[in-house]
Image (cartoon, rainbow, N blue to C red; front, side, top):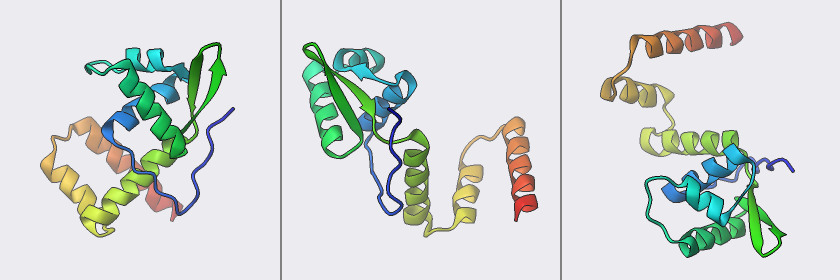
Length: 132
């Protein structure tokens, strides 16, 4: 089953742990609590913490599960593109009052940007100009 698209006006805010869990599920397609825990490298979380988080995420409509024996197998209910799109738009709207220019300017002046990245950004701008 494919993840569902979020409603147009629905913004799911996800915390760091929830986003890490979603990334594991998007990559794998589906996973048990133990498999999600295994994928959470660099964290010292208990099995029960991950299980609780997955239950909370399910109640928020982010994931769904099916029973397989005594285990629950979770899969994403939302698409990664939908979550990243909504999170990025929310960030631009809240921090930069909707100004894409201010957001890009901030990133270009506060982060190291390689020549390769600048060239890619320039190509994106050129493509966008052609399509508008």
